[in-house]
Image (cartoon, rainbow, N blue to C red; front, side):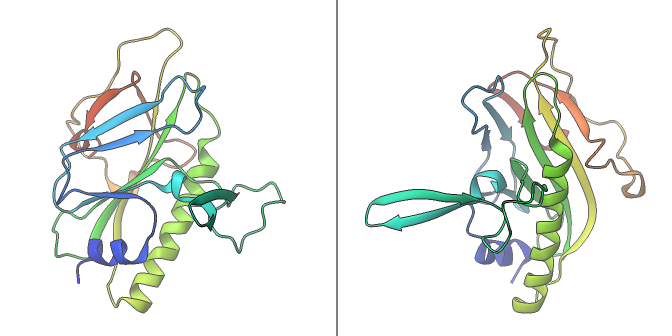
Length: 201
């Protein structure tokens, strides 16, 4: 079983597999947000997009009725202590360069409007969750998950409506010099913009 297959079996959140889809649509749950939607294009085999933020909703189902009873990373976690452990970023892109390999890159993605803030806790909480996923996959699926690179990315609009600044990287940042949840890659975008996945690599 490949790493991506193991993740698909383990996780119940909505996800997009690059083997069967060419793009993933990332949306913002806040209807008042200036940045509502971004499309990640040129997905390929070995790529998996996880909708983390939306997957945090704990639903109560009774017949055809669905009701959100909690929004958290785990129903085992307290929601009353004011920490960020229940936060989640909008999406995570898992990239396995060699589909049958155990090595992967993880891109944590957050959508923000104008002057971005509050993303560090979302990134850290999601990073912790992926570490848990790594252990569960190893223990129950007997599949190794070697994270070789992590990047934190914020797509945001701008108050001056500046031209988006995103393009293909000329150099690949060394994993030892990776950015951090507190200092992510910041990309000015416009609502409903399409971004190639390869621009993040």
